[in-house]
Length: 282
Image (cartoon, rainbow, N blue to C red; front, side, top):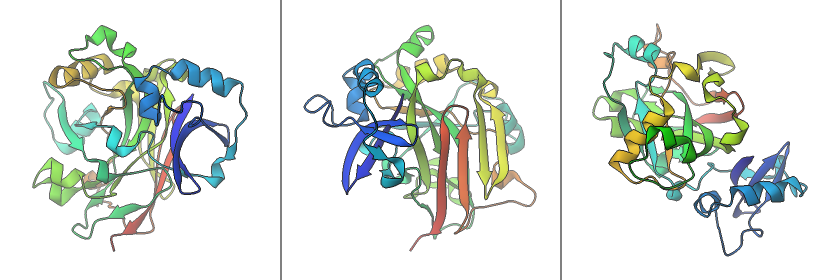
């Protein structure tokens, strides 16, 4: 099942994407859940799937504005740096003993099809295509072997990075308003039989920049869920973005940074395509 948050006629709704159509779940869960995060928190995934199996789409995707998979203020995004060994090599980073984690603020994220805003403050606006896991069941100190019980599914994230500001601090470089994107939807874990077989690709203006199997990510998913949940209780809708592979613009010769008019696409097996156009900050 592909769950999404969308806007219809100016009104935010949540539902499921089926083919090129959309099934609105707002009325089905009226009074019980008001968002995708609410569906997860209420353990309603099975009911949502059953409803979608017997219901025809009531809107075409072309009629909708797609937001991030979880309303921005209902998720915390824990993002990883240097999570693929090839990216460690290209950046000269020594092998790490533990994950490097930073937060993505809600204001930094836009949805699929929305404009990415290149900050005025930088000429080193870079791309990082990533796969993110979304928590469906709350927990603290979750054992690695129990992690899949707490994962609802997967989505895509483009971690937009102002490389010069990143030298000030990771938080500064990673959180300019509307500089990152995620979506287009949450794919429930039952649709991804083996996450290690997922292939992640990033394209800039149609040219492949990054390509890597998810199996080359440095940290096991179970370990990541255990690690983050040791720090804080994970809640339904919380997201862990698992880092980017090699091929970022900052490490190319010459460096390649994003500019207004560029189209950035992040794609992964079974997770769809996250596509956004870059504009200049007004």
